[in-house]
Length: 95
Image 1 (cartoon, one colour):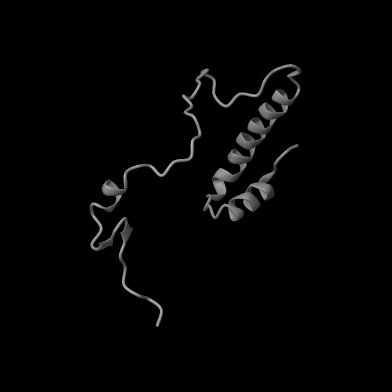
Image 2 (tube, rainbow, N blue to C red):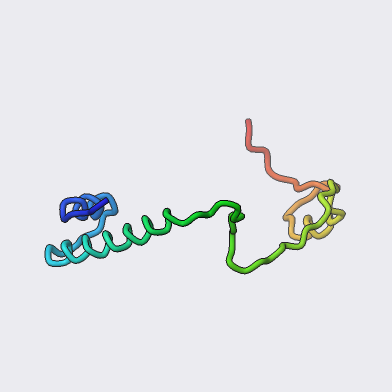
């Protein structure tokens, strides 16, 4: 795939970028180089290679997924302007 000046203009318009006339040919060359590099990557044989989310192996610590009420009602309601038992008290909004 090869990009020309008109394609650069179209991409710039879609991206809402203002590009000087002098830079359009240079950008077309740079974008062609990038596309060429990506095309080289598609030639690699990745059979048997596991997909990665990061180049550094990291395992996130997991906790048991247990349903509970949190046992922190007092902390949650500490800043409530008004409360009734373990609930926020709010003004009536429907007449």
